[in-house]
Length: 361
Ligand code: ADP
Ligand code: MG
Image 1 (tube, rainbow, N blue to C red):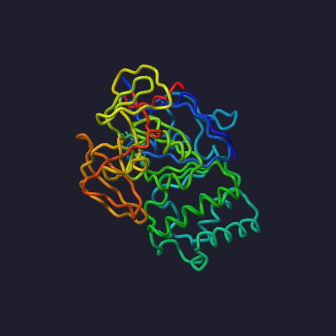
Image 2: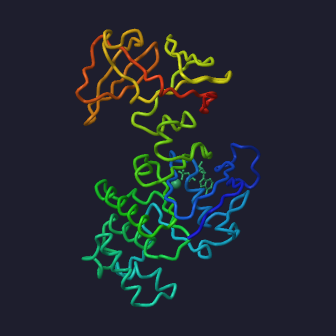
Image 3: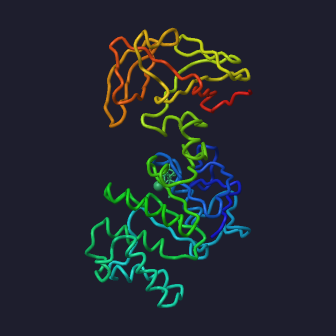
């Protein structure tokens, strides 16, 4: 296992990149801790696979270096990096049986037969494939083939890291949840450094200790699921994480007075003077919907457009002062016709040109 350092790393698929926009991966400096469980999260095309392939060695970056512990591996092939990588679609040998497929990465490295058998057997149990052990991979379903792919990545114990690139795409939803839980268990048991690429926030937030959020080739925030929820560093993170995402509205802040939807809020913190495009973020979970009596002087008139039931909560969508706004309320909360929105003012986040501004005190 290894700590993985990205040192001024950047990549362009063009031979002669001219400007920032030519880079599929903009400069990143980061250390992946030995034994960490990370998710790389972002929409399609934001550069996740590019970054993962640089870590695995399938791609040599146009700039910067990558180190496994103290060793510079920037130019090393995947075989020489001692990593396992699981791809979006199955990579297996159709003519081999399930158990032969699982044994292959071990046999290939000269692991003794008794140990191979033990590990293959464990993996068959883990993946619930024991009854298919002697079957040729060819005749199996896409689901089962992808499970073998996962098993081939997980069966080795001597790897520096295990990299997953959207590995559950072809797996059915119920199985997805099971396999994700299994991956987390295996991580806890063996402590491999794991990097898991996904565009699905639920997958990222349930698997990882730390989530790396990417947007247009840039890492916009690295944080725990709680940090991404409470203090999104960029409006994109606020909007991308959460369902629905964070409300982001035009507003202003002067010292400890925040203005939003024609209302002033006195905060018990203080901001430096700000310029640029100012926006206020507030998660739907921190917007209450109530009637005039419930709102008192702190409410803002809200036009309710729809109410959706989502199990234990309801999503209320509407307009406040000409701006679209979502609120998440309890399933048994009453949504009055004459509604007012009440904001939890301790939960406002302030954004200057899309970047979070922290209060000074
Ligand atoms: P993701 O995995 O997040 O969907 P990718 O890393 O695959 O994103 O792609 C990032 C950007 O790089 C995209 O704009 C994509 O079109 C471009 N790209 C990816 N692979 C290549 C390639 N082999 N040649 C040229 N451009 C590529
Ligand atoms: Mg990809």
